[in-house]
Length: 517
Image (cartoon, rainbow, N blue to C red):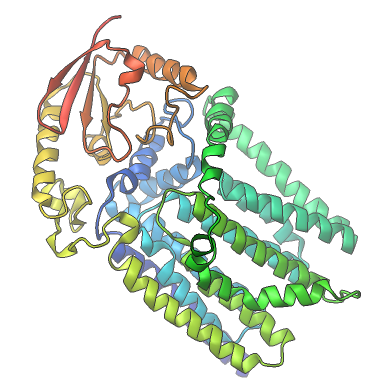
């Protein structure tokens, strides 16, 4: 009867976590807009569903797998803002429930599993609310880490088999920090295979890797995507930016590198102590735990490094309750002062969750809306019925969102009247979706240098030919530009070389009429 009651309690808590994690993110997904991020996957998911593929039909350096998932959500639930936000909410639910499951598998008390998991639900996806590459990638990396921990702890080959799939999904969401996590998990896995002499686990991991690669190349073939396009856009061009991103690790200052992420370091402090302690033991009878602790510490340090190299706002504070949960598990297992440590970890998790929620999530910091009065927002229905119930406010028109809506309305009117094939350049990428048209945009998002090559980049000629080929192939005669563009000032003008005539409709909306040159 006691076991039955425990199972019933677990099921009840999981059901609560499912509803809580989904509903909380659904709410935040309707508060505030950052056009370049909020509509990116909305548009590319629709394009993929409509038969336009990344690398072939539009330039992309990230997120093809997220586009595929969004296309599935649109296919199943319909093209709407609800199904778009639901995509993010489901992933918030997945990482929440899986955290609960893993901590429970590691023998943490069920009430503590629930506590840490609910903090994960609060801090993970509600930062953005809508699907975003950094969040998806972090979740896939975490799921890979969880599988690695379970594979070592429970000694089941199914976990080894699944690890390559989740690492692959992560890599096809965003290359970094996935490539770092792949390196760490691969090295630690090889050490485990050699130390344990477990051939069957190696075979399971190798089989998973091979099957994933075969399925990937089948998808490339079915999409008629040239391997050269994939390699240049997803590997070589991002690699050419690597030096500039590494420079963002500098200056190596205590305030920037350590103090800013002090709570992350505190959350793994117990694990660092145990790692050092185990390192000096000659007879490592707890070698499996040593590897697991090593993987968690490495994961923490690598995600901090990645955060330093990204242009986005801080989002890795969602890892604090996860690391505290792991610290709780291993302090209970190996340390005598478990009660004191337990109180410290619970307090750290609770206080950091409250702090980050009210300081970063509630005021929509990730959406660049920090310090902006969200009460000034208006209903997105003013733009289009499918944007109903969105609290529309952006960083560009914080005091007068009606002016922004008026600019969009003018663009919608002119675009609707032009029945010819046209290319649309804008961060408001919902426009072509609601017109049920393809925008013929040569890139998923407009951000010079970070999204596609600038003139001084060695791949600029490839990019230029990619754009011009798209214009010629589709018979594009005019290119409409609706600003503000978060990362651009003169889109495509360095590619067109003056072979256009500009026609202004307003300060933020104009048309480039293409000429034969």
